[in-house]
Image (cartoon, rainbow, N blue to C red; front, side):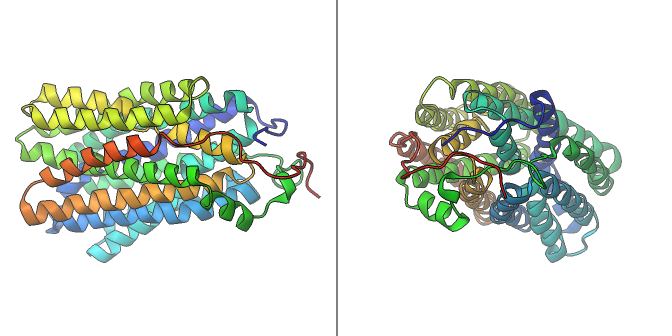
Length: 412
């Protein structure tokens, strides 16, 4: 069920092009928190206004991720990546030039959300699932996730320096030009099987509707979705609001930039480690441990005095746990349901992640504007971490039983 057709692209080419695309797409995204104060102060908007736009971005990413996954599974990832890169450039340019909160939300929220749906994990993981054998799939997903983490380490300091040197408008336009590099890289992921060659066929030629119904009736899929909801809430709240939280605590602006960069650096090791362990250990155990460790790390951070040293230590710890949920979650989906609809099913799970992201970033802005503090949301992230650690334990990773599976064969 989880086998893959004969690879049509070289392994190194798939990993290199996929990794650079994720590095650019996720790296730019992780720096959006750096724009919160410059944009709101210059435009006279509240933090809730900016937070709402980023919250819409996360929901848009999740919703369009399902359709991007369907398109990638049906037509191949190349077209989806090209369209995603174009939307990304338009969205960043729109952020730089939007005169009203509504237009800013359409650019930063809807357009960039659509772009991220077409240029990040669900689409790239679909290629990895089709091109890489099951015995190396979790490792390859760890490599791709590590690339996204390296993108944060690489791009966040660059974005901070661009803002400082040229202002936030020009910095966004520079990023809009940079993200177009995804288009030539997408040619390295153009799968010959889509458009005339071998195609992946599911057991019993399973339709999209059948795949969706099967997944949503399966309890383990529901539990993975619930855990990913928590992941989204935690990482997006911290990624967007921690720079402002640190400024409120009297920290210099560069502390936030270095903190986000450290999260990205240590997540390179965390995601790769999670991918490697996913080949050797139950993925539910890895996920439960990650969520429990997050709860502990956040609790300790809230209890100790806020200093540059404590911020950097927290960033390193959270970095190791940041996107390390991605490889075992997606590898578990592939292991349970197979690869035919992997991008789409990953998109549904990611939608849950993005609903959590919406609430995390939006509630952070709402609670701060009403109370002048992020404390209540920090405490909620701890409680959710404990919840996610518990609900991942019952996940069953064995391939789902289907009567009379048919072998993979060429499409008509």
